[in-house]
Length: 62
Image (cartoon, rainbow, N blue to C red; front, side, top):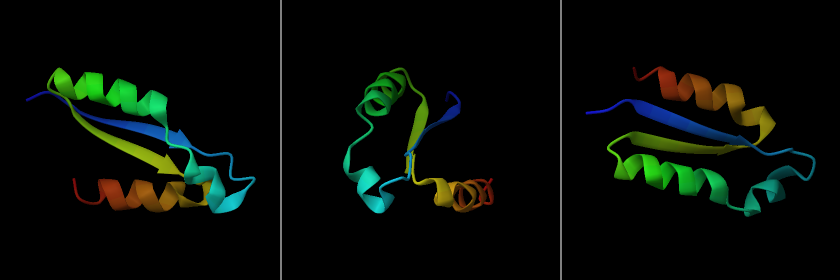
């Protein structure tokens, strides 16, 4: 099994939660190519104030 890869898109946050209405298509494209080659991929689409919460939630389980 190959490595775990996290792809992260941080929205500007200037428009609040509506910034997340647009899908991170570039990350989805890259992530699907990585998965086809055997990698475990997690895509994060975050607002700036959620970065720390996501980081600690993700890595606490390792």
